[in-house]
Length: 315
Ligand code: RIB
Image (cartoon, rainbow, N blue to C red; front, side, top):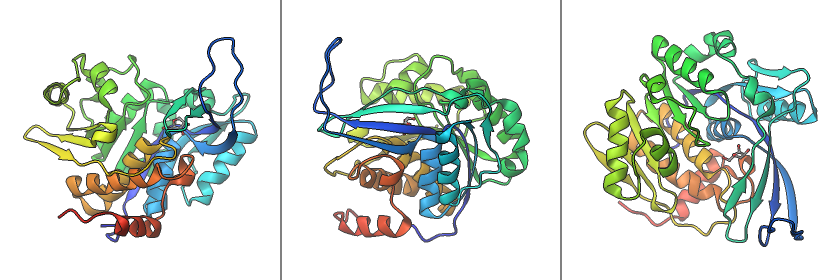
C-alpha cells in the first residue's frame, strides 16, 4: 500500500528541538540522579507528522514559526533537508525556538515537557498568508502546540476551500472548544484527550464509542481514537472499526503518535482508503518505536516496506 500516487499534505503546526535524556529512573524532588545517555533531535508534533509523511513520499509543506536562535536555523534546514516546503516557515526575531526536554525510561516510555517559544506566535494571519499552499493540499494536519484560535481558523478556512482536515488534539488542553471544530474531517485523540473534549468518561470500549459519537453529533466527521498497545478505533456515524495493534519490543515510544498520524495522512491522501490507511499507520508507528528519537526513527517508504515483510501476515 505504499506505492499509490503520493498526495499533498500541509501541516499547520509546531516544531521543537527535543533534548532527550535516557534515564534509569526519575529523580524525586530535591534528588540528583545520574542518567546514562543524552541526545538532541528534531521534534515537535507538527514537524514530526510532516517528516513522517515526507519520508513516505508525500509532497509536504509546513506553516510554522521558529525562534531567532541556532535551534531555529537548524530546524529550518532539517525541514528543507526532508524536502518539505518551508516558504511559510517563519523566523521570529527575539523569540526562542520551541524546545522539549524528554525523559525516556528503560521500558521505552517517555515523559515530555514543552516550551512552545515561537510556536505560540503562529497566528490566523500566518494561515491566511499561506492560503495558496494550503488550499492546494489534499489534507491539512494540525496539533495543539500552537494557539487554539489558529487551529479553529484553519479548520474554518479549510472547509471553505473544500480541503479535508486532521486534528491531533495533543497535548490535551481545555482551551479547545468543540464548537470550533464543527467542520473538522478527522479528529485523532487518545483516551485522555477524548474525555477532555467530550466531557465524558472513556474507561471502557462502550464509553469510548459513546464519547466519540457525541463529538460526531456535534459536527466532527470521523473520530479515530488511539489506544496505545490496544491499537485504535475508527468511529464514524455508522460504525466502529477496531484497528489492531502491531506488537514490537519498544526502545523509545516518543513520537509514535506523530508517526501514526503523519503516515495516516500520507496513506489516506495516496489511496483514499481510511481503514487501509489506518492499518498501514499502525504498522508505521510500530516500526518507529523500535528506534530511538522521533523523526530519526521514522522509516522511508523502502524501509517501511521491508519492516512490513517481517510482520506476520494476517489476512
Ligand atoms: O509527540 C512527540 C513530540 O512531542 C516530541 O517530539 C516533542 O517535541 C513534543 O512536541
